[in-house]
Length: 90
Picture: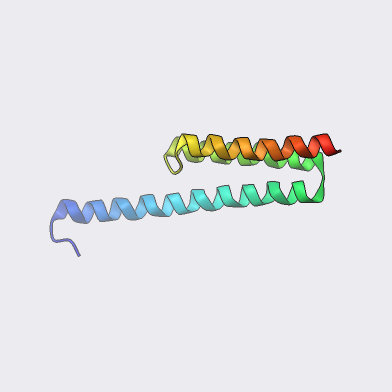
């Protein structure tokens, strides 16, 4: 445990940021899983809606600094690729 007052404050701040990051990551994970489930069922309309939601959550996570912007761009690109291949097959 820290003895210095500023170190104690930093511990509180880090705990808050960690909790926020976990919450954001959970939201992103749920959105990605919903998209992948829609792709697996083959429903294009549902997959498009899920893609928009997942992209929004990912971009918000990048804006908050939870994920790096390049990581988010790569993930969105991969999701879009899956959506496009689903559209081509249907």
